[in-house]
Image (cartoon, rainbow, N blue to C red; front, side):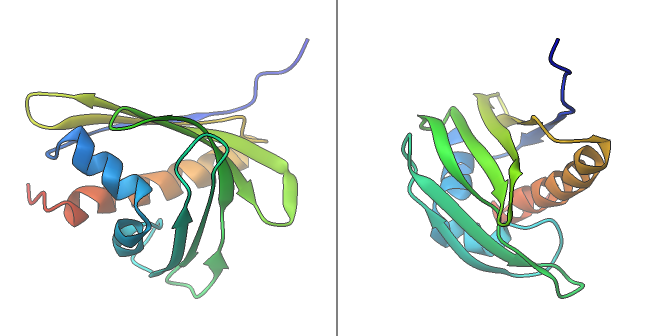
Length: 146
């Protein structure tokens, strides 16, 4: 029997349309303005948003360390769903899977982020903190003030 690997699920309501949210998570020019788990800068973003296309993001944390997650898009449904692998260079054994689901609401979008197939609880906790920080920045970037 294969053990179940840890996962993270975060749900946020954002006062922006699914199209605006989708653009912010898929267009490199927009990703540069907000991607990353803390207030450190996003240095580079590349995204070939199609099944089989690759992405690469380089961000610097406030403590000065740089990170470069990469991956391959598995499923792309504009304005609704984005599924991609999540890889850390030099650690191919730690490949995991990220899904963004975007559901329209009366106020904007309900965003559900699922990060599955994490290798252990420590990675789960670290990614939950990272994704939470990133998702805190998204509404600010999109102009949500409340």
